[in-house]
Length: 230
Figure 1: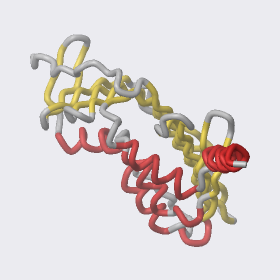
Figure 2: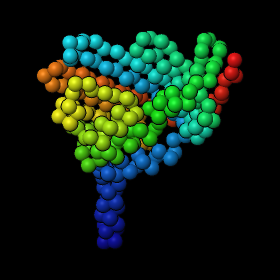
Figure 3: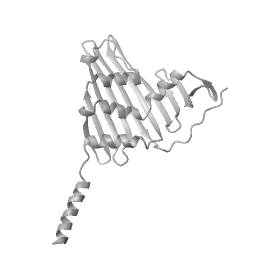
Figure 4: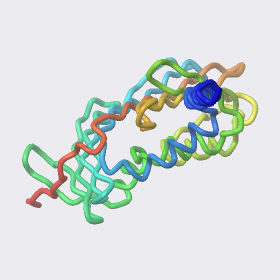
């Protein structure tokens, strides 16, 4: 009889271990995991498509970065909308821009901060916290997807602060929709992908701003050194 009771108890324990995590549990585990992320790489594309106010065009900025959070240092390569390449290293409160191949010059700290704040690991977690009550949790074999669709004033203001997005000719409260999908690894709870689309649409036309980021190489980035100033 005791053996039967033990078997039944064990089955209950095992079934509890396999119970799917709730949205709140996933968000909590993601927040906890942040403290364990010392470094990572990030690829980000920011694109704008305009078909409004008599304009029809598109542009894209591409950014490839290595981030050492432990030492507050960044190595950033940027390909801007004019296809101009920029390479920036930020460390110890100093920022350097490669003026020409092998020649580095100090650059304004304010410019450096604009780049570094866009690629900080805390950004996707902060965005999720703003709309946590409105998120949907979708699960695959390998990932958790935190999905949002709608409009939230605080969320838009935060995106505007980080990515300098603007919608001239649109009523932000009435004409905008924000779609956000942030993917976390099911084993580590590291944020691995962030896809955001902000759509502005009214009688004047349509504007779509997309922010797509992929994170990798967690805690594998080598120490970033400052270049010698020419």
